[in-house]
Length: 470
Image 1: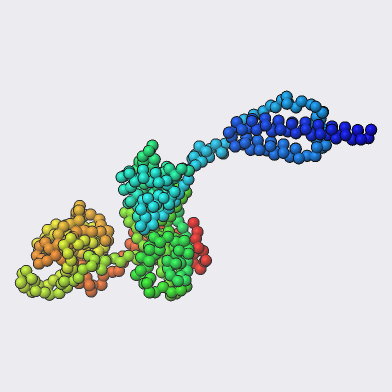
Image 2: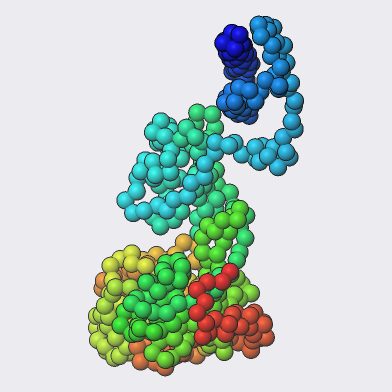
């Protein structure tokens, strides 16, 4: 009887195991059929969680679940009812807003244009597909616009996951926003004035090996470094005078578009200490919109007069008595002659107002400029005047006023240049010409109030180890 009892128990246990296995298989099959038809990742994840639960449940010791299921021997489990409950959950507002702002597959790129870059090479670096590159290259307006961007400048792009170009953008130094945007299977080109925000950035550094090495370490852009050398080039020879331990402090403009820096502007204030000597400069914009650099005391850092009105020339006749080649007699030569090819540009040696423009006796095409104080300059024998030049026009130092020629009494192309003080011609090579004009008394008050905050920033930077502050 004992043997029969044991055999009966074993048989009952086998039946229970078999019924349990059938039940689990049925549930898994029906659950998989239900969930396979659901495309959403969330429901696929739910299916996986159910399967994991079922696997875990099947791993529980057999006798641990007899009470839970209560399956009797020979129970039919094929008709177990399975119901699916579906509940719609609202998407949080933050996620909905993010999805509506930009497609999830959009990618932003930012690249610097390197020397030797082709359009195809640049776009390939921005992960634009080859088909898109070919399509863009067939658009002459777009390729011409991209080709006008110089090396060293930056360009931004937005693409989708397939490498299709959504737009390209570039902001030029004058604040013009160039945009190449997708229009179906083609692209449109537009230029508008960008809405820029101006921030001032403060940076400082110390010379260890070279100036550009120090500015790179401080994160100062090359364009600002170049301005820095030009600013103090009269006092410092940046090729030979720099010493280890020299320091610089600089405050400059950075322009932002949509929260991203897109270009630098002017140096607003700068300080350079070379061999124990400290030089300072602040930027001041005049009422006419022109800006200049001064010392904090109001002394201009710009040379009042250029050394020569033309570049790369030689003096063919000086300020002295000479035998006139046309009149065949000795006469006083009241200027300096610069020999140069016809068409060479002639520049104003200082800020001025045009006092005379036209023909005058032996001078031929002649221009007289009136400068600050009692100074004036005269330019003769021009082949042509600058387009639109007229009496009363305000011009700036370095502006082109005409071109070298041989009009009037001249045996060959050259510029006759005179420097006059109170209307009297003097030798421009030896005269005591002022180096720079200081801030006039009428602008002194506004100069002080404008530049005082800039000087305070330089004071803040002095003696600190500040690398950058915005």
